Length: 391
Image: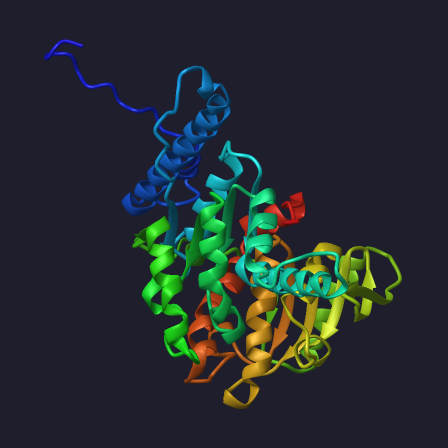
């Protein structure tokens, strides 16, 4: 190239192209921060592709002598205010990423799986079918076998059991070559900020920063709040009129089918569904949120039913923190799986949780944003089209 030749511009990658299409169609506003994030994830995809090619070619390395090992590929940790497009852009990246195998999972569901794998390894050691007192290397190896690229939505650490194993688990995972992309509402240094024994969690932060670039997404506005449709699937206040509206929606969902009770088996437990029909399930708030259910139970419901109808959601405060935490997890799971939810509630969305302390008060902002989007025409259309449910 001569000194006067113009520079060759890199063609937009698949993430940037997908984002630009949404802007061109008027579905979202153009935002420089979102474009920068899209470009960074397109760069990551190119790096992963190059690393994969190099690993295939290394089998011929003995013909030419030892080559210099490739630099590890750094993942991306994306954080910022709720509703700024973190999950949307990560999902664009995941769909287009050429690396295989890859996996996209909600962080709570992943950690539940990790605890199950640890328990299975310890049981195998006890019965003599496995060796080794430390479960982390085999658990990390099993995870790496299913995902060279691991995408986490809503990275959030609130459980002491999770906090105490994260450093050793992720160190072992990174050593196997797993590349991480994650979204979170908080910067890494704010993870598990006031948690029990946080000092034991800090080595995880050091390990994380060694293997990811930290990107704050300061998008201009909450694109989900701007996309709210007119169809109201959140009925308030409670009373006979609300009950009648919920019955009308439920009848429409059944499309002539007769509802009946159902049940799901989840890890040896039974999750009972009071009424189900035509792919929809109906619960009273107490049936679903006052029982000791967790992320795996809600994921099983999301895989089984395309719509959940929940009656009589009360205002929650400090005394209902357990119910609030379950509600947050439920809405996260339904959103992540592209499922629909119909609610009747005592108060408007942004007033349904009134606690002032604890992580629930902070995390409920995400729930408000997600419930708002889940009422939009775009979300409902995508749910009706059958958004893929994570494995």
